[in-house]
Amino acid sequence: MESGLKIRALAFFALALFCLPRMGHALHSYSSATVQGSGGGIDYGRALALDSDGNIFLTGSLNEISGGGNIWLGKFSPSLSLTGNTSFNGSGNSDDSGNGVIVSTDGSIFVIGSVN
Image 1 (tube, rainbow, N blue to C red):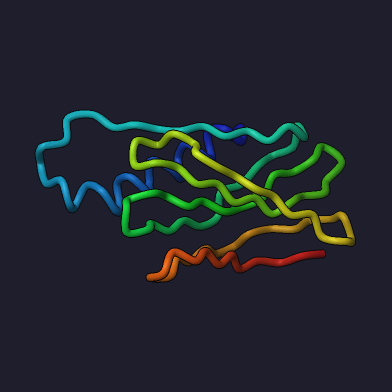
Image 2 (cartoon, rainbow, N blue to C red):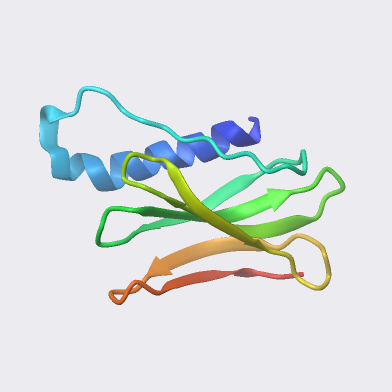
């Protein structure tokens, strides 16, 4: 599965899991978002969280063809527009991954993952 489809599937899952119960049966269509890293490798979305405004935070890894990955965190609006993102590359330059994300009540964002 290409990386854009994995991110799209996770974004759709976020929409279905968190938004549909609030909207009831009134929803007649869905939205999706695609993010693809520039390294040409397989990118992964691994975890997501919502803030009190309905923004979706998605973390995972953007991977290079050579095999190294960087932690990635993206912020999507409730309409699934990418409104911001950042990445982190550990000093070992190999297989870093964001595996969990939490948004606290004060709006602070915490990413849990591994750095190699």
